[in-house]
Structure formats: C-alpha cells, structure tokens
Length: 112
Ligand code: HEC
Image (cartoon, rainbow, N blue to C red):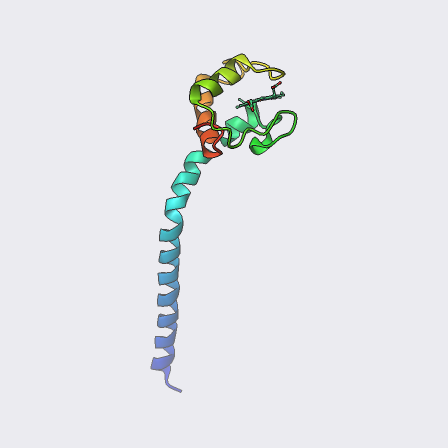
C-alpha cells in the first residue's frame, strides 16, 4: 500500500472542497446584499399591511405588487387611507418604520 499517495488523495479532496466553498460564497454574496436590503422592511410591512396585502398579494385589500406608485402617492395612501382602506397613522406605524416599509415596497415594485 502506498501511504504517501493515499494522503495526497485526501489533500486533493479537501483542496477541491475548499475551492468549491469559496466559489459558492463569492457567488451568493452579491444577491444577498440586495436581499438583505429588501428584507429590511419586511417585518414592518407584515405587521402594518400583511394582514390585508399578504406579500403584496390580494386578500382583504387588492394586490399592490408592480403598481409602481410614487413615494408621495404611496405615503398618502398609507397616511390618509384610500377608499375602504383606513389611514395608518404614526401611532400605528412610525415614520422610521414607514421608510422601511417603502424600501420593501420598492423591492416588489409597488413603489418606484
Ligand atoms: C385592514 C386592511 C388593510 C391594511 C392593514 C392595509 N390595507 Fe391597503 N388596502 C386595503 C383595502 C381594502 C384597499 C382597497 C381600497 C379601496 O379602493 O376601496 C387597499 C388599497 C391599498 C392600495 C391602493 C391599491 C391601488 O391599486 O391603488 C395600496 C397602495 C395599499 N392599500 C397599500 C397598503 C400598505 C402599504 C399598507 C401598510 C402600510 C396597507 N395598504 C395596509 C386594506 C388594507
């Protein structure tokens, strides 16, 4: 049995695994940054809007995905309400949380 060759084989194996791991890490890091940004307002959205627009889809309220509204329009809808949707004041959604919700809405193109 050639022990030296056997050890070399293991080293090769770990080397390949290491390279694959590094390549994988490099590949996911870019999309992850965008995802992290979009995810920033997800909890706030779920709390304030998710009940009626789950994931931006239709439920009690209409689908809001891909509506491409301006920040001004969206802010007005949220703060003053529209039709059957009641206004959501700062006591329910702070300005800071509203800003996070807008970031999340942008990721689903509800806001442009
Ligand atoms: C209690 C239920 C409810 C909640 C909570 C709610 N909405 Fe609505 N939303 C509605 C309903 C119902 C409508 C339809 C209003 C109408 O036209 O009569 C609506 C309409 C909208 C529209 C207009 C869609 C269009 O096509 O013009 C937008 C945008 C919207 N909601 C965004 C939000 C956002 C963002 C939040 C959270 C900050 C939110 N809504 C929270 C029920 C809700």
